[in-house]
Length: 192
Ligand code: GLN
Image 1 (tube, rainbow, N blue to C red):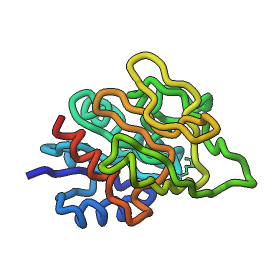
Image 2: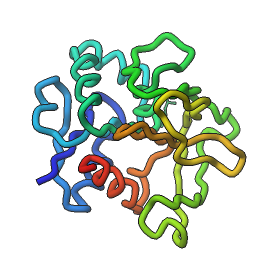
Image 3: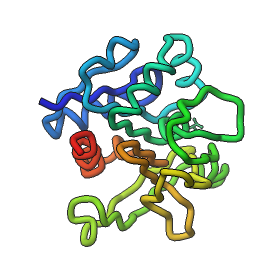
Image 4: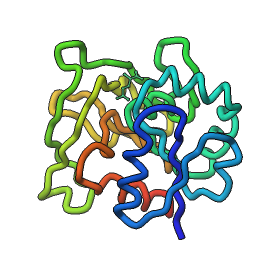
């Protein structure tokens, strides 16, 4: 039976557990290093990346999370994507697992939040059924290098999803919509 952890230091972790439950996947909230034992994958939710990073330091989670990510799938949504990255051009605790540079709050004040339909061919029925992506004070993936690859761009070229092996970063929030295809895609990734 697949068991997915959701990092529960700060942010919208409950929304992720609800989606996992709705697709019949069991989950566990992760607050301490020992909570990672036996998990098939981990989701790092949206929230405030500085707070998540500082709390991860306080709970001695940085090294255990890095080690977990070297062997298992991790998906970071929004603040979680920032936390997974190698570089944000600011001084804050990062896991530095993915070869991506991320710019926080990259879409500016006027468009703090926006929603857009995207073509996401790698999702189930992705060619015919658009994916409705929700962005909230979202980061942009400025560069993808090394072992990371671009998964998804906005029509204007901004990179909003990247993958590196079983590590996945999305600028947007699939846990805030009814569409569970991204969660199912991640569950598959944990088994790849
Ligand atoms: N703006 C937040 C940050 O920089 C991320 C926002 C979110 O996760 N919705 O950490």
